[in-house]
Image (cartoon, rainbow, N blue to C red; front, side):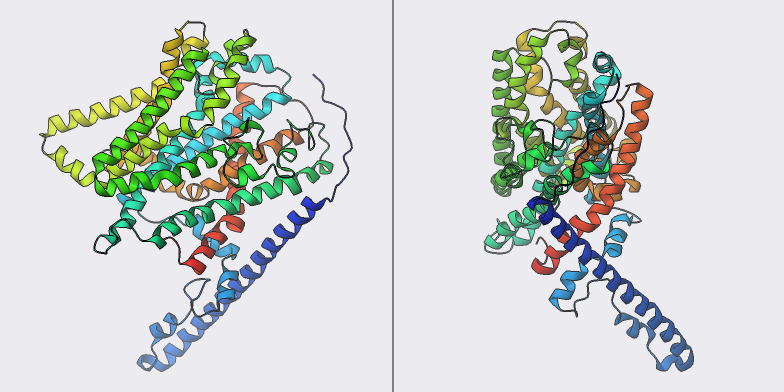
Amino acid sequence: MESKDYVERKFNADAGFVIAVLVFGAILLLCLIATLRGALLKLSGILSNMTNDYRASQLGNDFNLQEQIDKEPTGNIRKKDSLPVRMLMCFDFYANITKILSIPNSASVDQLSVLNGMRVMSLGWVIICHLILVQLGVMDNTVYAIERSSNMLFQTLANAFASVDTFFVMSGCLVMLGTLRALDKFKDSGSPNGSFKFWVMFYLHRLIRLWPALLLTILFVAGIYPNLAPLFYSPFFQNDLPTASLAYLCKGTRWMSTGFFYNNWINNPDYACVGWSWYISNDVQFYIISPIFIVLARTSWIASVGATGICILVNTIIVLLASGLEDVPPSDNGLPIIALALQDSALFDDQSSWYIKTYFSFYCRFQAYGVGLILGLAIYEKEKIARILNRFVYSARLSLISFVWFIGFVAGIVNIYGCYFWANGYPMGAWAVAFYNSTMRLLWGIFISVIVLMSSMGYGGLIDKILGARFWIPFARVNYTTYVIHFVLLELYVQTIETVVHFTTIEYTLIACGMLMCINCVSIVVSCIIEAPFIQLEKVLLGGKK
């Protein structure tokens, strides 16, 4: 298959482009000024210390060197500076990248370091899956690539969408655990469930955390991205087609469903502005209702677990009925069974409506988040759990822990490879398929919860050492930025190639490794310019999340 002829595209400086240039130009200017000022402060500090060393050698005990050093700034944001200056220094690029790349010598168990590796590996799983999805449109052997989906290796790749539930579990866990620990400070006050200010900050902090990277990505996609086309020879660059252009989907008021976190409720979230951000919308909606379960946990952990369990059960029943009555295939999103769907187009058509209804919906995605809430409560009460375990003799305790690990791994394997036999031509009954569809996310949530809980209690072993390794930390810190921008970079890659792609396993593997490294490195830079400054601004203006 030959590539298309080159199509000349003209530069279009519309209002969106002008606004984007002004906004990004202002941010880069702030970064430049703040970085230069930070460098001058460090230089003056070095010169001052050199002078102090000389004076100390001349004056001996009459000069207090430590007292003089204590007067020097310990960071780029100094309390003695005015508020505008402290706000400016939030954009110090060197200070921000130093913080992101710094690796602590050790981490306490309470920090759940296992989540660092889990974050990076899960998002990497998403990226390599999205890579093949964007490549499908420019392949010259698409049928061959789709036929490969029936083998075991491809089933692992195709079920990368289970990693979305990993993030839901982690999110629910951290919200429950972090908030319960924060509310412990109110135990001796007249409001043990937190003050009004506490809950205002609970929501405000979330918006400050999510909005900068998301909204600026939307601005880049709508304003800058279309004007990258004239820079490349590629015939694949699309900037004005409704179903093929990232920019078109963010024009006008289309961006609002993403910016205000409801793009998972529109007719087809696949065609929403920055459509991959449907996860963020679901997460925000879960976050909004999470105080119900948190406050219940303060009163009675049984009530909290019971309420969460009821919501999980309702979620399960909805998916069970929708899947069984519509006779849909056994799949989270259709990708793990596309090899069989290739021979049966009607199957793919039937799957599409179910995919839209249950893959993105708030009421069909609570299972993993609910498991995460229960996990967070379990970690909060892990000392009680440890005391119960210690009542058993060593052999019985070891058997119980081994059994929990076994259950967790079985749950994970069933989730990932539940479609394998069906995709290779072995039939399943409609309600057997429905049962799988309605429990697969719950099973994955159990798998992830077992890893996190066992690691937090000291029973993680080799898995804890791998996932909790310190080299994951810098990439875990920019995980949110990586998620928000990764698909833009993948689209930019596939729309700027000048010839079609010929799929082979080796070539795909090499490209995937390169894209993973490239995207993570770009994310560190972008986070230093966008995400980190706004996190610092929150601390300067509001004192951070209390």
